[in-house]
Length: 274
Image (cartoon, rainbow, N blue to C red):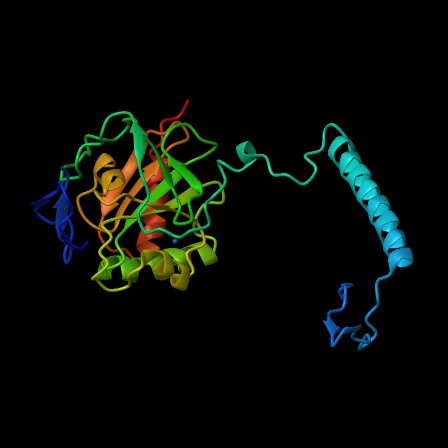
């Protein structure tokens, strides 16, 4: 677990060896030829000399072209299937789409109570309590929500790009997943938090991509609100929720693939039976 100053957060004692605690709180033109010495210059390069006969013909042809053009415009404006947009994009169909612009911080909204800050207390007082519903976005603006009822358990992984323990644990979690150690029905969401553009592995969007992160990722806001709301005290910080959105387990500190597997199994085994 790695220590880093986060706005509105104070230091606490470490939970695990080698880990520190951080706590809450972008055409030729037809024209009359000029006269030289009292005579009209001869046409050059195939230019057409305009006289009274062909001038009349040109005018008639021009009028016909204009009429046909106006008729075509009227057909286009009034034709087509009423249910079709005619190629015009309805703005209401795009308002919820991702912007496509990568941002390292995104706004956070939440409903529910903050989770108590993780401390070295057993049993964890947050066990069985509801995790707040946190609405955020991925780096490209795709909506991401954690908390609340779902189809199965959820594991939330809070990560800081500069944290050496996070950099060590991410490959372990990916390895565990590659060998089938992460339950198929478990949703995994990474939360990039405590972003520092002067620190190693910035930007976090590239860091997670380079690491091969295979799951969803939420970009926390500049105040690390999602981290604070979730009761984080250090990095990496993991929380497992049941299908109802209640906390089954949480922990902070670096783990091996084997350690993660055991911790996940124990957490799921602790889920209340109905």
